[in-house]
Image 1 (cartoon, helix red, strand yellow):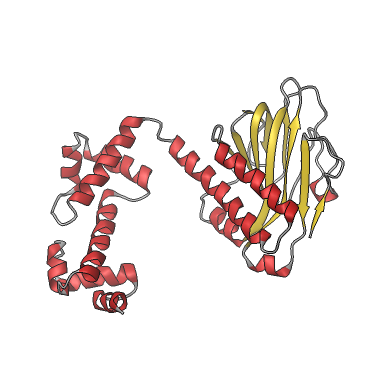
Image 2: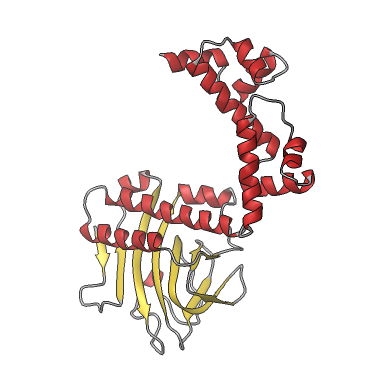
Length: 302
C-alpha cells in the first residue's frame, strides 16, 4: 500500500510516500518515499505541501527520522545542516540526509533545479554509518551526471506505482545500489591523477604475478620506480590495505586454488607459497577462513 499525491500533479513533480508492513521491516531496509521535482527559475519551492513529517519550507530547518538521497541533476542552490555550514551546490551533487540531523536546502531562484530523491531506513544503512562509510560531517558528494543512477530513481518510481508483491524488497535493493554507486564515485574521485592509479594497478599485478615468489614490498616499489614510503601510503589509501596485507590476501586465494584443484599436500602448499612452516601456514589459513586447510579441502571436495 502506498500514499500518493500525483493524481492531478503536473509533469514536473511526482511524490510517493510508501506504507511499510512488518514483512518489509524484517528485510532490514525499507524505502519510505521517492519522487522528483523539476523547479524552474523564479518558481516557489517546494512545488506542493508534503505530509507533516516531511513538510519543507524554504530557508527553514527540517529534521527527518530517515535517510534521504537527493540527486541534483540540473541547476544550483544551497545546502546547510547541523554539521555543515551553508554552501553553494550545483548540478551533479548528491545530498545524503541523516535521521535526527536538521538540514535545509533549496534552489537558487535564478537557476531553479531538478531534484530526485529517495527516503529509506534500516539496519543496513545504520551499520554503514556506524562503520564510517558515510558521516554527517560530509553529506555532499559531487558525482557528476550519471544516467545509471537517474534510471534507478525512475525504476523505483515505476515499481512504487505498480505496488506488486515484493516491490519493497526490490526497490530497497535499488536504493542500496544508488548508495553504493555514490560511495564508488566519491572514493574514485579522490584519485583523478591517472599516474597514481596506473602505478597502483601495476603494483597489484606484480603482486599477483609473484604470489609464489619472494618479492618484497620494497622490491615492488623499486620495480615501479617509486619510493617505498610513498608507495605504501598511496597503495593503502587506494585499496584500503597495505601492500603486505594485499600480498597475504593473494597468497590465501592461491592456497585455495591449490587445495581445491591439485593433490599437493599441506606442507607442499605451505612451502610453495613461502611460509616458514606448515604450522605457520595452517595458523594463517585458519585465522582467515575459520577452518584448517585440510577441512577446507574436504569441504570443497564433497
